[in-house]
Image: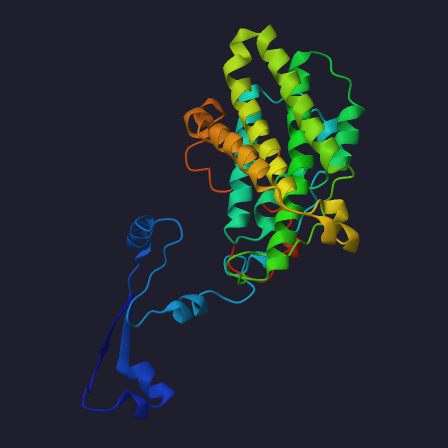
Length: 324
């Protein structure tokens, strides 16, 4: 903020030379840092200042180009752990039931954000374990389970990873085939080619086995039963959604087989039954979400407080933009 005064108001400032301006104008600089910080604190997440003479263009021009505050791509990229690394380091073994539930809920929330038009590399695939289901399966298979607690994170997240890999490809294929959405409605780009080597039926069987395993652990330890029942609800929801998709969409491995495309017929009655079961599970999500680990105050924006989530994992794939 500057308070300027000019001697000789009768002359037009534009007619003055640089030397005359230096003589004629006196400036008194006022520090408004505290006032600025107080005003900025009143803005909610995502809000920007807009005034008649202060538009988005002025806001962008106020920050130097190539500044990290302006362009998220200007922050130095750093190396991240791989799926094999985190399993070998014991991330899954150190994960309690409440964190497993929170991780599943956060992953499903990221799936919903992708369906609402956000970039999949900034949502679902910020969960490192969802980026390579086959490697996750192999890595977990090489780690012997020392106790019942070890079975819950590995089995749950492996089943989730394979199930979501199939679901994402089916959804993307269905929307792409329909060709009725705008870029703002659904982001078709998938910089990471995440696939599952398991067949559709094998994936559903894996999810079913995980449900049984968690049920057995909960039955043996009543103190853990409530949280594990909530995790099982999420797995049942995923399995029944996949079943519904199987009844309505050509299976992934047969998508491009003309003979399968000509003979496939949707089974709407069976799909409705599967969706009814999925809705029944989903109605319990809201009542059980707080059984999971809760975010520290003010840190729930990108799930970075959960060990499996790395918010800038895929930043190298993002276009130039404001930091998200």
